[in-house]
Length: 131
Image (cartoon, rainbow, N blue to C red; front, side, top):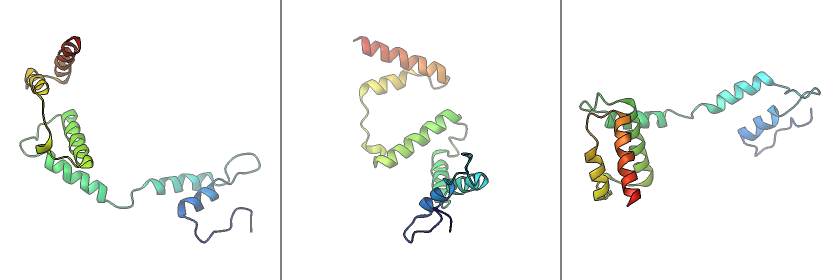
């Protein structure tokens, strides 16, 4: 048997493949370059579709019929907010909004572009920072 090819009884699949794929040729190259690529691809695949299906279900709840015309940036922002609140165990009714945030939101026009909204927010935050 070659050196380093014996299988340990309690060895994980990751450890097994790491040991096999670390083998080098005398010239310094890897012994199994194509196998390295194949194993890396196999280990990058998800174990199941559950996480993808969960994300699609969340997207379906956020992007409703009435929100069908949302731009990508806003949709991504809503999804990040949704996932962040889930991860932290926070529900929308638990969030306390202060007056400053509400005033800031009211100053952004509903039809403003992202850059216009960003400019309003920056201006208002700089005014607050000066005080």
